[in-house]
Image (tube, helix red, strand yellow):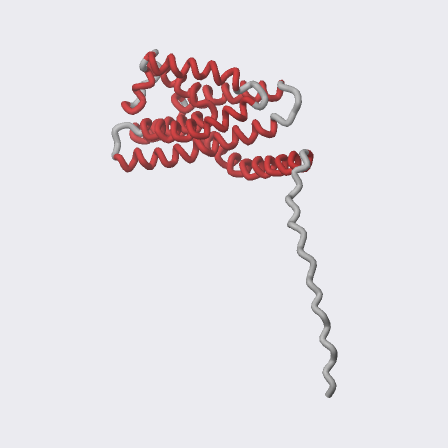
Length: 223
């Protein structure tokens, strides 16, 4: 029983940090660092560095920057584009560190799965934000950003304290994500095509063809 509980806790932490990193990496780091420092949780050796005051301070500073950038229409999409190269690798590294002192193969497997999960949540977040930014009012954007912040922090707390519940909810999220991502990016593609039509970006016309040279007709030969 204890072995099963340990497995569920490790799996929830591994998938939890990857999932939350794709939504809000800095809130994830800050949550883990504070909970580890206060003794609320015991982090595995690979994540103990998150309790360092320098790491907590840096995560807190970047979370404050993201808190405002993520609520400005247009700026949030640019922020998401930049963080494509940050959230996904960080999710893979955190997932590998959550495994603890297991084999290198287990750590590599966790990094692969964690990176994929972080990529999925990041794509869902970024795609949703692009569509929300088509609305002229900023309130929908603010609501989405606050909801993401709350979901990321609450999800991490659930992964640490109620691992079985978190894993069940994560499975539902993955199913929803698989269904949603193609539709999100399909809608974004249609939006880009519409903007191109509005801006008059018609496809380039082929160069005019040269007139055909007319050859003189030969007189018929007398048989």
